[in-house]
Length: 147
Image (cartoon, rainbow, N blue to C red; front, side):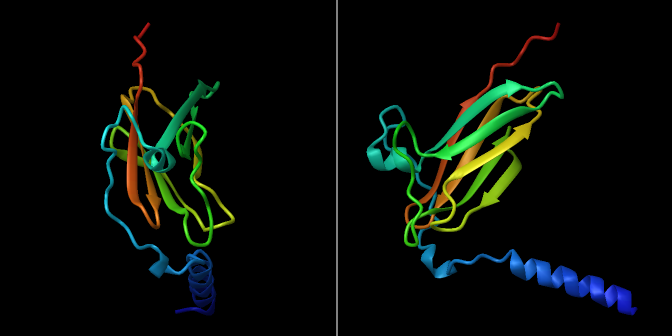
């Protein structure tokens, strides 16, 4: 291995250790998939953990802003050292298109990304709470008729 290759490898290893999580993995105590008892009538606890998907307008390049906030209505999930959303994933027709990993206290349950939604029928969001498990919601999209 050349000196140059060794320096590149050292840089990659250093960067990967920087992206490691700052929180203690032992604080993630529940990884169970959770479901609301009545999806049409969520309790406050279910509202707090269920991701809300918002779809914006398509830009000139054909990308649409899709935002996921963890919490429904006026109830937003907390972000404290003891209780927070540690990961959110956005899926289009079952295919993961973006994932964000979050730290306690300094970040909150939010993901925003621009996506080409041409032909996509459904968006889904998965939010992972360190105490209360994994929560999923879906958003059906209207398919535009071809002109």
